[in-house]
Length: 383
Image 1: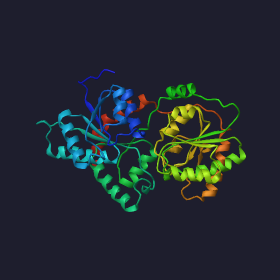
Image 2: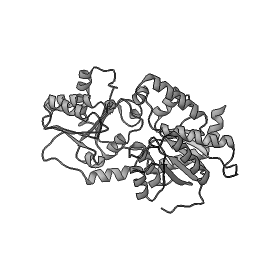
Image 3: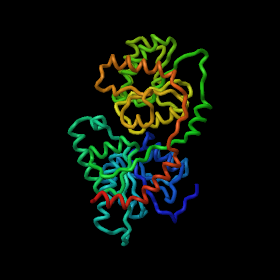
């Protein structure tokens, strides 16, 4: 796609090199195009920058992010803003949020950019906040500290966006955000459907194939899933479970599988092509403590899989009540496992329905609209 240098620049800042949900959000924007703006992405070298280059997007690989440190990241971003003179500086993830807030507001205080009065608007998108924020911060004191930091940096932000209504509600409750726009993750519905259909694997005999796609981390509820699968296999002989992903819990989960005698029916393939994995599965199960706007659930629904997930965060905005179980955090583990096993078994009988969701093109169009409204949002927030 040809880039017009006459368009105003929207500089998106991502502080991590890996390819997770945020990276997909950014690469989808790059692939769909941002109407009326020249998209430039600042990030450290890694999987995200490689993908952006494949798409022909403008990417600035630099010393920016968690590995570079605060002062280096601040100098990097300040220099880029002074030279590029973007109309928009848009941060993603807490580290970039803080760095961008300092850089842009310090420049605003000086009121000078290359001897001009040009100043960028500062936008932020929140991708990961939980009802109990210790889910991400690990302790109550750190959670309170980060709440204070976010309250301060949002005061100097022109536009705040959230990837779900639940996320927006938490930003208001925990951080005192006055006005938050909701911009859900967009997906290529037709592309996902066709990609999974082309990789569909039909088993030799009728079997129930259960899939988990997540980091092997405590907040993903994988121990409960394994317990549930042990019960399920007693009721559905020949059922299999694929736990795809990488993480620190692998040895512990493998030990649980061994203890339950499930070595022949449970696999840990590590990192996999998610759409290919969906093509060889019947039901996707996601038992996270919290989700904001899960690409895994969106892809699974678009692919036509049956889905069971916890009714937390943004999940109820994607799924029906029949596709969810209550939050498992305060539930007895044995009761939780029995409930999940029952829901997975019943998922096979759920009706096939057409899934409708925001497309990537709709997402980028709405983002451009938010940029146009940004200055008005900023002034209203100050009242």
